[in-house]
Amino acid sequence: MKNSVTYGLLIGVLSAIWLFVVIRATDSNLSDSKVAPIEYASVFIPLIGLYFGVKNFRDGELKGQMGFLEALIQSFKILLVGGALAIFSVILYVNYVLAGNDTSFQSFSGRIFGALLVGVIFAFGVSLLLTTKSNKVD
Image (spheres, rainbow, N blue to C red):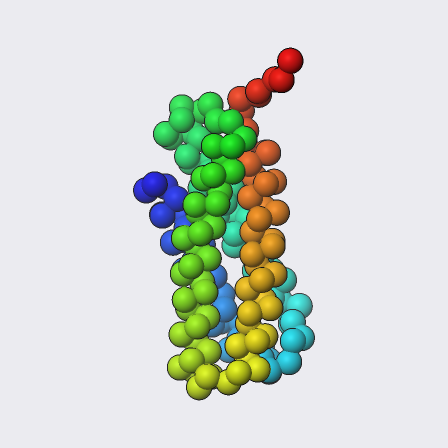
């Protein structure tokens, strides 16, 4: 559990920092649903965090032997911690910095749903990539 919390916090903190920096740097209007091209680079945060988190779990706790389901569960634990922290920072940002603008919250909720979808796809991909035990069904 320590591994998932550590890498989840890493993903959450980096996502929150990315959120504040990109919004300040681009001066984009969050009331519309247009995404600045630089925002697409944020997909590397969960990808890199998941990869190194699951790899550390496999090499450290499981001595290099990990099945697909073990990797997938570890990926979801990491994403759960990171996503909770990122969503909490988004809620704080919308409520206190943007003064509770309802259209901004709707734009962020769409981005959070997209991040959830990307995270689930990355969880499956990283789990497939780092699986070392093969379970044959005869």
